[in-house]
Image (cartoon, rainbow over all chains, first blue to last red; front, side, top):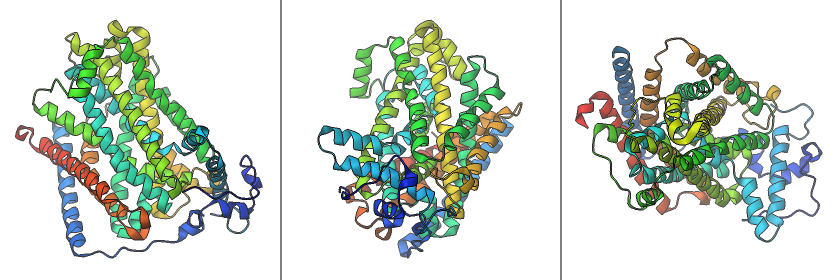
Length: 77
Length: 445
């Protein structure tokens, strides 16, 4: 997907000389800093994903336990 | 924060990004073979940086240890395989960044809520801080070979990091760090100077032989190699850097080239480290606890003083590039979750929190390394535990986001990409489980 050429192009060497219109034409609408304040919103979680996330919570607790055991063993010996 | 002088909500950050897009647009309009090269030159960066950043000081020392313990054999092509796994993961991160223009933390918090976003952030920041400590250990040891005192080594690293990030321009920062990262190639002349048996190198690459003897140590090296090549900070870094660079879906194809090129370079330099130190194995020197300076000194009879110095410099470079990339990943992630300004296109006065985080984490890690008698082995062990065990959940969220049609639209994973990702995910999880078992009871492996 190539970008469309513009009739009259500004000098890329000088960002300060890019007019707001140039900037708007060069960036995708959702690339602007102001547009990035928009949030995608929470994703709807279906049944299997709920189960998956609970498994992840348990996994994290197990990881925490392993990390503590590893640290204690390293300190002791 | 909008600069007061900027009209119509167009910020300095937008202008710099637009400037880069204009260069790309001009490249798109050219014809002939120059077009492809020019476009690639403008697009490459995040993929090369993330892959060469992954070739960090501990990784290069791990490759060196592998070469000296096992010689030339299975582990040489295995490095290529681990980087192939990294490409599968990092391609998704690159595509997410180019399509959504958001970093991983921000998308996580958006789509899965603050609890998961916060948990992953804490996990990332803790893991990154520990990893940074290991980078400073490598830098300190590498410069120690040349007689540089630890305080000067740490201060110099932080100075380089500060100078690079305060250019106020993503493009300048990226090119500076890429120039530094490509110095990872110094392991290639060291490998050549070691006069390896090239026929054996070719045979090992084609046949994966000779196989190492099965032992707990072999399993741990396999697990560590997998764990070290697919790490959480890489996902956060590449996605955020792609968004900051301003890549769009039009650039995804070249973003893939960037990622693959980075992986090939990193694999080549990693294999060079293995080949360089395999000379120690051939001469019956099989060290188990060599550090940077020990390796460099041990290599002197075989590669000369210049070769040994290049080896030590390579470890310093590897630590430096990784320190920059990991600090930047931490700053991006924290700013994304807190909603603060987060772009290397912002001058420091407009994104003080972002830059303070970036330099602050490096300062803390550097200070830790300077504390006398600190148990650095414990830090290295915890880095491995945190990295290997926290990667599977982060990878899972990456996979869910790459299949999220509301975010990715037509750029969601294709079925074959999901299959490849599932294979990589299974290997990462297996590596995590084996590592956990080895920590709890090594006799079970």
